[in-house]
Amino acid sequence: MSDALAPEFTAFNRWLAAGELRLPWCDACRRHHWYPMPRCPHCRASDIGWRAVAGRARLYSWTEVSHRFDPRYQGPLPYIVALVEFDDAPGVRLVTNLVDTPREWLAVHLPLVADFRAAGETPPRVLFRAALTRSE
Amino acid sequence: MSTDIAIVGIGQTRPVRRADRPLRTLAVEAVQAALDDAGLDASDIDGIITDGVIMPHTVPREFIAAQFGIERGFDGGTSFGGAGNACAPELAQLAIRGGRARTVLYYFGVDWGSRAGGPYGFHDMYPAKMAFEKPYGFNAQPTYFALWARRYMHEYGMTPDDLAAVAIAHRDNALLNPLAQNRKPLTREGYYDSRLVAEPMRVADCCLISDGVGAFIMTSLERARDLRQPPVKVLASRFASEPFTGDDIFTQQREIVRVTGAHRAMEAALAEAGITRGDIDFAELYDCFTISLLVQLEDLGFCARGEAPALVRERGIGVHGGLPVNTHGGLLAHSYLLGVEHVLEAVRQLRGQAGAAQVASAEIGLVGGWSIPDYGVLLLGRDRR
Ligand SMILES: [Zn+2]
Image (cartoon, rainbow over all chains, first blue to last red):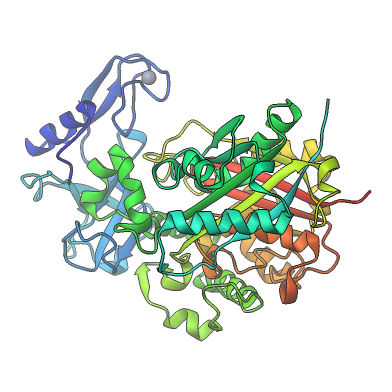
């Protein structure tokens, strides 16, 4: 699906495949942004690097998808699409899927951690799960 | 020189889920219907406008010009989709006032009902969506707006009943319109029987998918007064946008549940027309989803943030409600031609030709067109000379 990635997009997947979550970082204004782009959307500088985040996030919004809108997406139905905000990259929100998180726990601000079980797939994906487990 | 312009002819094909003829044929039919409605000949047209993103790949302007033998002296492309439909008069007005054109044709349509990929395929043009969203199954407009609806529920306490009220009001309006694609009555029970596709979005929260084309013709108000139909005056048509792209608009705005451009376009249009919101008798707004209609009512300034569900509940948005909205049934129940049908319906209302859906003493109508991150506001009025 993503065999023609824009050049500024490839670094994210390279880091992710190596088990690390890195986001674009502007050296000029010292802020993260998303998505990757040639100029920083905050200060328009073009000296953009990649900086690791710890992978702790909070749930901003979510939806349980129960319809196959696009046949190119072949995952099992239903699945949860989540929009998450990072504790150490304020203002950046990432689209991801939730795993191992009971449906009744879903609420805005739910603490989450990154899960790398799908980082070896093509394309690599970073998933998230509830920071607490059922037994805690 | 300030020259008022008017919409003098409208035409459309009957919107359907899958048309039995190609989009180009539908476009020719809609344009001919608009010419016939105005009582004009194709040789009267000297400028053509359509949207700048979708139509150039499907029914380009030179195709229409060639089919009708139109000698163009003016050619224009506006935004895309919804904002393009509402802002076409802005461009026509500039051209006519500037002496570059005398009579301008606008047309817009889609065959997303029959085209492979449909509306979802349109977003394949956004590279970050392809790279970082579609692999997670975040791959269709209902999923984007589901995130908005969920967040809006969290912030303002909206309930599924509030979404149901919007869907039901639109379906009730559609029942009054013989051209509407979905004329099956919708009850509250029926809403909850409707299938969840991206919770909390149900099928009944999503716009239709359609094949069809709409067209309208604009010329100076002075000339319009000699033509066949009652002129519908363009009071203002204004575009506004914000520095976002289709890639980041759904997820990265500081406050995601917000219709970029709507407030600024509305303020500019009201100032130009010299009217206030209270003067508006009805509104045809870009209701791609129930949630989008609610947020637009707020960003256009009809109520404060978080209060749109109460506006729908208490003031009413039916044809006979306090603020009639989408009197033809909207994108939710009339058709999904990205809002060109909203312009045509506003013209019918102001001519007094809206049949059973006619708003009593409709003098001024609003059309709100959205094509994220762009917004267009069109204010139309009855010619009161
Ligand atoms: Zn910066």
